[in-house]
Image 1: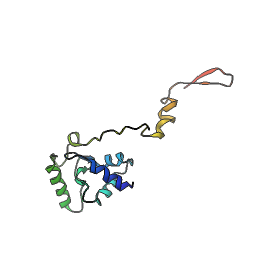
Image 2: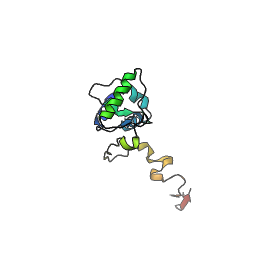
Image 3: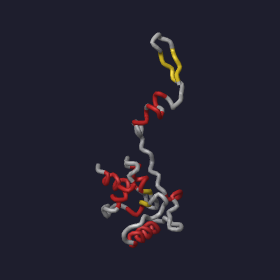
Image 4: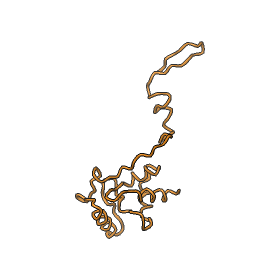
Length: 140
């Protein structure tokens, strides 16, 4: 699935009366730090995608070339029961937290070893290893 397709599929899952941020969408589709790309995809989305449920990280409606698009987004959100305070959506109340998908794989396989822990333990942990004479040695 393309990046745009993944964005549209996720945005279609947002329940009525809830919002997500551009960065949250990017992270959920596996492309953290791609919030601007999500914005580009939302700007070109098909009619069946509820684009108005995506807001910026502060809960504000992002500016557009035409103010009518911003007003349309506000009207659609209010029609769904989302109340804005001083031009912001209270994310603590309305932000959608999708259910976690069960998976046998870790979400970040790259974090399984090395400095961040994994089988070697946390950084600075004592490790035991066998030296060339067969004796156990403890290292930090």
